[in-house]
Image 1 (cartoon, rainbow, N blue to C red):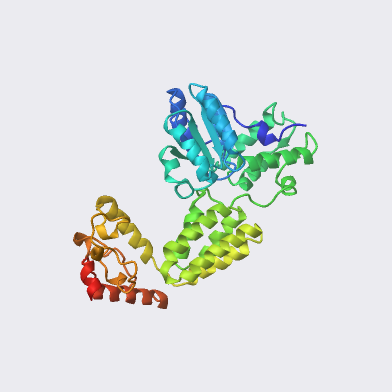
Image 2: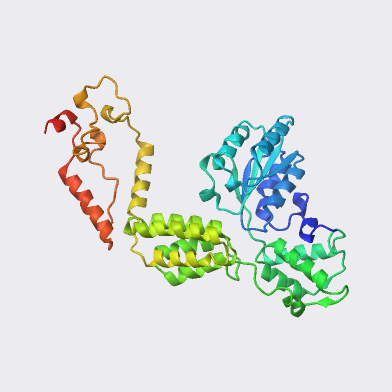
Length: 422
């Protein structure tokens, strides 16, 4: 039994890769890396069917380095240890990890030291946005390279190559130009989808028959894209979903959610909705943030197509809910300040203070004093990192803001012995 057409037509070298000129073309980064025999660790990210793993294997073959392919979900610790041992026995080696964003902490801790010391080069492949899905330790050790959907013209090139190739259909199928363009249009830049449809046609229709759009419509007429009919990048709709929720445009948000649901891209949806809920709704409606988490869990449990019901519910609620970016803006401001101006913690706040009198120690048994204690050092005590949302329409957030102003008005002290005597 023959392997699937898409498998048989997988490129084995960078020269056989279709499209992706900015990556594998004459001046592409991977091409230059091969020419200079300078392998690097990298993360290849982009939509399904764009050839991430294929490019990783073609790169390894082109640079003539032994490689091992693993999967972050199915590969266990023993298999990873074997891959590391094999790499140690070679002067250079590449480890390709599919769905790299699913590596748990234990597997990451196992791989990272060997990536760091050059025992092997890591090439991760993922459909997730690496800036969101991957931790900093992985990202800092790898070059991030986006693999974009193929153009319709590129897909047609791949279809013609598959029809003519002896390891493909060996010219036993006759699809006219309109038919090839129809397949390319339906594919949404996913060559694997296009080749699978071409293979269905080779089974469905007799050899020598001229096949056009009408015949192909009997096989497939539903587009394989979650985006619109243009060639927007994969993550544009994810970005548009968040911006629509932030702008309280429920109709637009539902539209972009629907496009992502058509692609069944639950990973992108759930990450973006969680971030949006905490970032843009936040203190304006904390219960909505919690319900967003529950809706995502429900969507994961039931899967598509029913997942659209809880996802649609939370998108509607987030859009129409009171919004507040107060917590996000406050932590971003504080992160920037803390990175530039670290300071020593006051003695009475340390876990185990040394040479401190009892009357000057933190009063664990005096909750009535906790709000009166100064927690920032003197030179920072007037700093205000939290920025209340003065325009908030949320009664909950208004109550928080009033509480915040009350504590500022009451003031704080670092003289704990005096506080205890009052």
